[in-house]
Picture 1: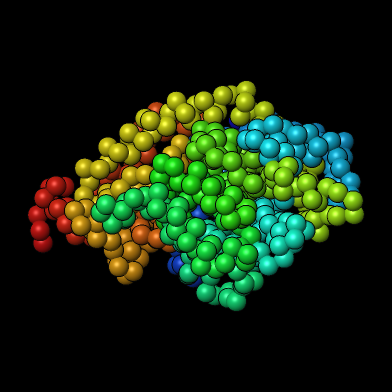
Picture 2 (picture 1 turned 90 degrees about the vertical axis):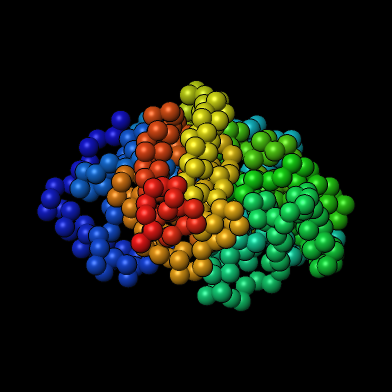
Length: 472
Ligand SMILES: Cc1ncc(COP(=O)(O)O)c(C=O)c1O
């Protein structure tokens, strides 16, 4: 249980002032805070966090898809402090230390098949960056020096560093920073809600093959895919999709990278996405939930086959980050994994996924709700202007809906979730994996009136009749 941590009234004003003057927040319109307060979260306990004024919020996003074990897990953090008493820091560059060794062995034991080599990073972008570099280096080492390109999916987010951004398929995030290292090419994602009538969803996997053939298989190093794609709103794979991609990768000698930065450590009710959807990647990238977000850590997990050429003679992977596998973070990860196991977190998600989904499905009677999709504790609601035609909102309308109303209103009513329009407008929910019936009820109690109000405000077709408001 966390201590109260509530700042005194005078300290609140100072925090606000300093936040506005000095703190540069990530992916944030700083100008928006000229007139309004920066939301300052000062403490957390379980599924809840409190702001500087003492208001309580249900953390329906696990902060950023990562506080999987809930907040206030002091006993897990304490494992880091205890580690500091032994060795506070040492690098993994030519040296090893017990927490990194033990964590590597533990992660390898949880990962499917021959994913037995664990290369640590400090977070998700570094994991993706490492995988893209490893894929290139692997092909060079095995006699295919021109295999450098990476196939990724449209609207997918794979990280903010320049290499990871070349795989990211969100134009608005890419254009301010172009040009990238060449070679990031894209294919359609698995948004089955918007597939043309009669289109076989497994053909979406064949789009990967077509793209590789178009580029020339001798130029393609890897395909990178999330088990459930976050950006765009929790796109799940059609049945057989990953199996077909695996076949294509084998046929064309392309490495399959599963970007599990969100979808691992219980988010889908399994350790890794590959176990949920039954496929075998060559490389898995992870971060976020590996420590329950109590310390920053990521990892790239590599198959024996791909790691082998780097293990021989004078070869090495010329790559690494100073703080990757930090002893304190590795000790925290070991304690977090112990908690996942002892508390039966994966089993809890599997047992509660259906009621979570059912609660979200129950909102389908609200006209603005076009689709409900996702897996495990990772779901999205797509918002539409017309449910029958699936017509979406234009840019100005999406701005009014998401930033002009939903984000602020959901937060004001005590629910932290994501209102996003990197694809079509969606609300995403990804609660801590300890959440249960009580939290699902609370989520519904906030979402229902807010979505009904959004239906009215946006003049959604069918909305005026169904939510009982007369036309103006
Ligand atoms: C699928 C995926 N890959 C990579 C990243 C980048 O991770 P990080 O923000 O830890 O660098 C993210 C972040 O959300 C992600 O969702």
